[in-house]
Every structure is written in C-alpha cells, then in structure tokens.
Length: 287
Ligand SMILES: NC(=O)c1ccc[n+]([C@@H]2O[C@H](COP(=O)([O-])OP(=O)(O)OC[C@H]3O[C@@H](n4cnc5c(N)ncnc54)[C@H](OP(=O)(O)O)[C@@H]3O)[C@@H](O)[C@H]2O)c1
Image (cartoon, rainbow, N blue to C red; front, side, top):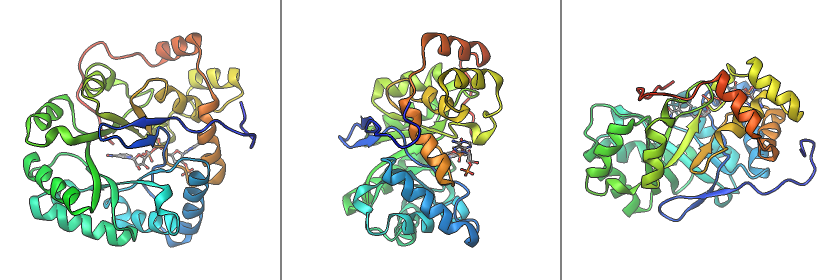
C-alpha cells in the first residue's frame, strides 16, 4: 500500500447513463457547516480530498439547514470545474414549483451556476411525476446537469422508470455498508440492470463499524485501517460509488488510500461470515 504519500493510482471512474464519468470515491458533507468554529477545518478537509482526486462532493439543502452547502461553496471556490457537485432537494420542497425554488437557493449557497447532479433526498408526499417534471425543467434551464434519487427502494424505482422521462434517473443514493447489505438482494442488481449507479452513503456506518473485530482482523493483515477495509469492500463491485464523510486531513488521506487495497477471497469470506449477505428481500433502511 502507499498510505504515506507515495504516488497513487488515479481514482477509477464510473460512467453514468448520461455519459458523465465520475470518481467512484467521493466525499460526503453531512454534519458539516453546523459550527462556525469548525468551518475552516471542514473546508480544508474537502480541499485536501479534491487535491487527492475525490472530486465528487455530496451535499444537501438539509445539511445544517444550508450550512453544508455554504462550506462546499467555499471549498470549491476557484476550482468549480474540477468538481462533480451533488446536492439534494428535501421531499417537502419537491413539488413542481418548490423544486425549482429549492434548487435556486442551493445554487446561491453553493455560489455556482450549475449543480452537476441533483437528487430527490427521499420520497415524500409530492408525486414523483411532479418532481421529475421539475428536475427536467432544471436540466433544460442548465441549472442542473442531471438528476437522480436517494433512498428509493426497488418498487419506487420501478414506478419512477415507468414515468415519462423517469429513465433519465442517473443515480440512487442509498445506505450501503457491511452492516447494511439488504440492497444486495434486489435493489443493487435491479439498478445495475438499468444502468442506475448506486451511491453508497454512510459507507463506514458513521463510524460504528470501526471497532468490529472481523473488520479489524482483515485490516491488520493488510496493514490498513478498519475504515479503509469498509470502503474497499463497498467498492469491490462495479456500479457503486462511495461517499465517506471526513473532516480531518488524516481521515481524508486514509480514505483515499483505500483504493490501494485489494481484498482477497479469504478476506471477503471472513467478512461474509461476520456480516451475512441477505437471503430474502428486505425493506431499504435509511439513516
Ligand atoms: N441520502 C441520504 O439520505 C444520506 C444519508 C446519510 C448520509 N448521506 C451522505 O453520505 C455521506 C457519508 O455518510 P455519513 O456522513 O452518514 O457517514 P460515514 O461516511 O459512514 O461516516 C462518517 C464518520 O466517520 C468518520 N470517519 C471518516 N473517515 C474515517 C477514517 N478514515 N477513520 C475513522 N473515522 C473516519 C468521520 O469522522 P470525521 O468527520 O471526524 O473525520 C465521521 O464521524 C454523508 O456525509 C452525506 O453526504 C446521505
């Protein structure tokens, strides 16, 4: 492994249905922007991640009530074109008009003219058809480059795909990590069939996975950390993008180096024993 600054391989890219090639390892921002005292460290962490090639940045109007988008705006100032920017509209804003207003507000906070990928954060009471219409309007206006969804289960995705323009969905961002494998049963293969990329959120279960003995045993064999094994595990298959959130430079660098790690068949078997794959359909979990 080259964990301490040696030259690393470029981050592999995944090509979305619309032709955009995005890095499979990006950066999350939930809990950023909550405190003014932390903001400059968060900005530095995001910038370090961009320097290391983790140029896909995931945020949302929900995070810190817009505060995370402001942090992202500052982190990408002057290098907007190097970044693939993802943000999300809250379900209660996701009406035909509300989506347009929410996007305008996000653009202002991010201080950019376009969001590359705009997601419905989860499904609420507004009809999916109204949200899709609004998202298509935003694409036509150039305010977003493309759109996707988040926290949509198998049946919701089928319903979406049946709508006019519904097949223009690029991504489904869902909870996926070793301790949350439910999507492997049906959602992950269904998304793969339709070319919808799966963006794995909370890939280290917000830190709760880090003390797991099986994960640590694999990590020790590789001279790696538990976080790196958890990330390498989510990225072991094609069609998946992981977006860990890290607010220290050391965590950012460590996460980037997960791509130097190749898990062996033995590693994967041990992890399957500790974190069993699903044997039946399960409702999609969310955090
Ligand atoms: N669509 C949705 O509904 C949804 C839901 C949840 C999350 N998300 C997105 O997914 C992103 C990631 O998920 P998440 O933030 O929930 O959880 P996560 O990425 O699984 O975990 C983040 C936590 O792990 C710590 N961490 C990161 N790298 C580490 C490392 N190498 N070693 C030890 N600890 C490490 C971070 O600490 P530090 O901050 O101190 O570095 C933070 O406390 C979010 O930030 C957000 O952008 C989306």
